[in-house]
Length: 479
Image 1 (cartoon, rainbow, N blue to C red):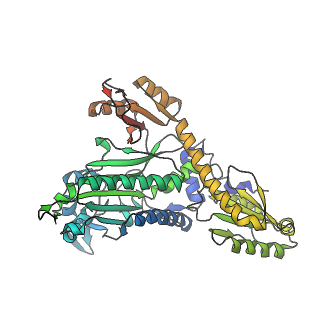
Image 2: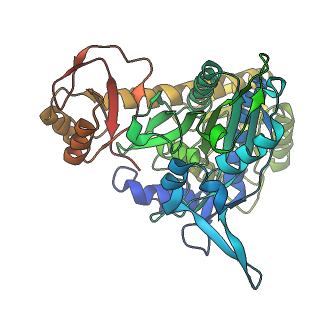
Image 3: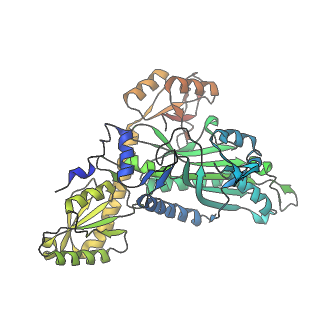
């Protein structure tokens, strides 16, 4: 029997989504509040989840020719000012270092809000010839942005991310890189995290400061609010000109290369929690879960050593998976069931005296499946099968929900009615005029998310002015 008191401190997800989210983060020991306002401590279980995510995404980068490097946290103020639009966009969020020890600095240093400035300064020293291109560099690091309102994982003053920065000979190569990374993000977030996303181009108002064009993946959370899950920017020549990055091409003329930058952050952990969690706590996709399988012995005080011996045998058989044997005698099996449900472990194995006698064991999926009795000889194959089923079921369920709250609107009245009935994505046609966008934002209290790449060129009329257009754009309330 389960010990229901274990999760009594977690509010019901539907009753109070915000409190539920915070309670799950804290109770599952993913993170805790730091003594500095707006900062968090990522606890070992949360960091193990981030490491698994990092490893799977990093492998994709390396498979496409990217290499990791590391650049300084501190950026001279003059570097940020080299690209005017860039510094204007980030200025409200920049944290500054103005003293070193007891001495005032001659130039303030920014704690990096992003690294385009420092990286392009270095690229100007490294890139001299067409033979030096393309430059395909990524870094895993921390970022600082002085946010007014913060929330664990979703928005903190300091967070973890990866940021790629590349240089190319032509505009076409840079655009291809921008879209290639967008595809990598979609593949990773949907297939590893089981979070469905909309991939598309941002409108000018949502573009990254200093970019030629910005593309994003947008996820929808269970409270109907959108979460920007990743971005990929075609920087054009804005930064290469600002930092005077020039190379000698094959035709013996000097040219400016074309740049890109792109990134996803630890806010993806927040997306995971919200998308898949339930009233029992976390539910983690098998491909990134720190513990994929937990083995819980059912002990009665008789034949316990026989049961524990079988549990250790099973643990060894499953060494290809991330498996944990919980043989702590001071906790009951019911307490352990609740603990690992709270921690989101996808699959549980129960082994008692009768199971040992019958040369079998019981598999219990975290959600969406019945208990499965399997023979010892079929164990490895069945565990692999069940984990894959869980992974696919999680994505299918999440995708079906997003589709159920994605609507279309042709008029402002339709838009407001759809949003009031069930918050989610609302698709509208848009003429491209800023005035129409501004009115839609003001009257609906939503923001434009992106223009999906696979849903364009469908004729319609702008929801505001009625002008004929083929541009379709998604709107939603956002975090």
